[in-house]
Image 1 (cartoon, chains in turn yellow, orange):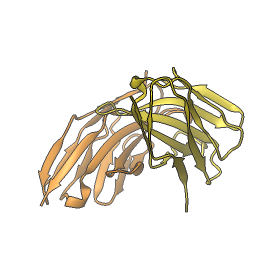
Image 2: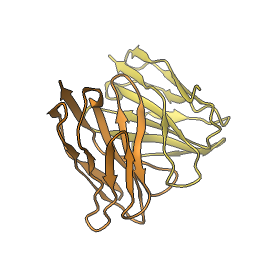
Image 3: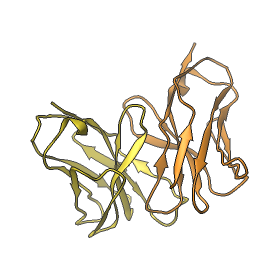
Image 4: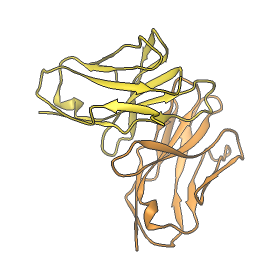
Length: 114
Length: 111
C-alpha cells in the first residue's frame, strides 16, 4: 500500500539552483496538494490541483511552479532556490468528493538552501 | 477568511494524565473539522474528524466535539501514553480544494 510517495527525502541546494520535488499517489485521487511546514507555523498551501491539467495557487505560491500531466503525479518545481525556501515540503492527496474527506500525506521532503 | 487557532505548546505530561488541546476556528460556511497527528519523521495522518455541529469524532482514546456555538473543536484524552508523544494539528475544510491547519501543538509524555 504505497499511498503518497515523495522523493527525495532530503536535499541541500545552493542559492540560485533549481530542483523538482516528485510526488506520486496510487489511490486515483483527483485532488493533490503541496504544503510547506515551517517550525511553529503549521502548514501553508503552496499549490493544488483538482485533476490532470488543472492547477491553482494556494497561500504561498511565489518561487514555485507545478504541473499535473497525469492523475498520479504532481511535481513541485523550485526555479531559483532562496534561503527562505528552506522548509519541509509535504505532498497530499484527497479523493475530492467533498470537504469532509481527509488528506493523505507523503512522508515529507526536507529541503535546505544554503 | 478561514483559519484555525490552536493552543501553543509544547505540552509535557506524565503518563496517564488527562490531555486537552484547545482549537478554535473562523470559517465562512459550514466547515468540516479534523485533528491530524504527526509522529517524528513522518507525514501527517488523520486522527479524527467531525463534519457537522455536535458531532463527536473519536479514535485511539482521543475525542473532540464540534461546537458551533463556541466555534471550537478541542482534543481530549483521558489517559495519555508515552506513545502519544507527537505534534497535533487542528484543521478545517470548507471547500474540497482546501484544508487550513493550525500551527501545531507538540505533546511530550514522560513515563
